[in-house]
View 1 (tube, rainbow, N blue to C red):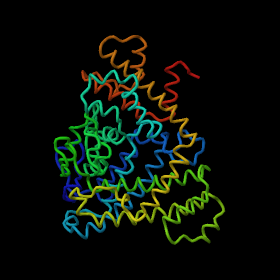
View 2 (cartoon, helix red, strand yellow):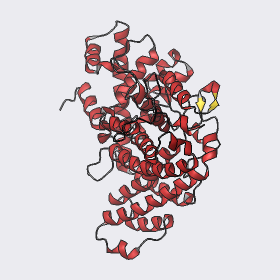
View 3 (cartoon, rainbow, N blue to C red):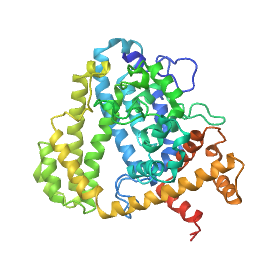
View 4 (cartoon, rainbow, N blue to C red):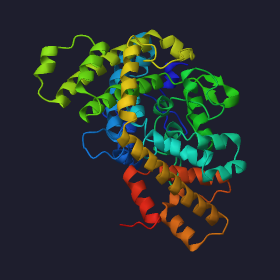
Amino acid sequence: MNWEQLLSLKRFGDIKKRPRIGQDETRLGFEVDFDRIIFSSAFRSLQDKTQVIPLSETDFVHTRLTHSIEVSVVGRTLGRRVGKVLLERHPNLVELGYTFNDFGAIVAAASVTHDIGNPPFGHSGEKAIGEYFKTGKGLQYKAKLSDKQYQDLVDFEGNANGFKILTESREGISGGLRLCYATLGAFLKYPKESLPKKPTNHIVDKKYGFFQSDKEAFLDVVTELGMKPKNAESNSFYRHPLAYLVEAADDICYTIIDFEDGINLGLIDEDYALEYMSKLIHGINRDKYYALQHTKDRTAYLRAIAINALIDEAVTIFLKNEEGILNGDFKNSLLDKCKYEAQINDIIKISIDKIYKSKEVLEKEVAGYRIIGDLLDVFITAINNNFENNNSNYDNLLVNLMPQEYVSQSVSQYDRIMAVCTYVSRMSDSYAIRLRRKIFGNIF
């Protein structure tokens, strides 16, 4: 892979390429991507979607929206620092007009969208959609779908759903948000389809990145960017290099900030903060730490130092392995084999035990399973009955309740189901709860 092609400014839906020279220097193409994302309805819905604690009653806890913004801030720093060195290594990019801010803008835009496809109730929402088709009433559709289409549903993936949101055309709108191909490439952490599932231990095979309904769009992006094929038969490709930085930004934030949330909520003893963070970072000013009067101030101090240390490490590893990353030979995430690997794993382990498995989280995740399953069932049934002209008055009411862009009249069972899944996945946590109550007669 080569950087000139990987930094394509062509927008999804364009016919011609766009040159870097001649761009408006006050608002570059990659910066426009960030702005379009921030103003999108899909991004706004993240303000009421779970990051760690579903439907928390405190305003401190991070939502998907605040998490995504923080990841984009870290991502921008990673991109700029890497970009500065890459421009020294590849002077032809300077001649073409690229700056280190371009790298920062691409990674920031891709980072701020990294969770845009996540359904309500966090990762349990993805599992809830999958379980509906694997063991629930949705199992009845298996015989009507191809193996890959069915796998899209039973392993419903927020990353693939995000790609759909960013690229899917609607009536009067071609190419979704019409982002630059470079941004879309950096967004694709898992550039493969749902089958075969985890064929190797390479990081790109950990999950999948597009639904069968969006294969044409995916192939257009990876072809334009010159992303290296991994397995042509299964539409599997090696990553756009900047996807490693997007992943690192997310890994840094959820490792450190989820831990911080747990401490401030009282789920993790504050003593753990200094114990575990001091293993991760060196040079903590203990006098300054103990001089801070409030727990959230002390944990914020440790969080800032820890994030800076991990940014340094991620940049070093990326630049050291640039050639292997471009060739597809780098098989791990940037932080998987860093010098802080053991410390990061310790922090994640205690977060799993104390936060992710806490009673508050588990109770609301269980409720989320039921809510999502019920919504999928009533809307898929109504859409299918409507398509077959076998709809009842109740079905008509449900179809009219849905936004028209999700009311699919496709002859494909897969397309109709996927439209409903997209609709449900874009709901906020609170809206999903309210809608289920109304549909099942509990309107107060």
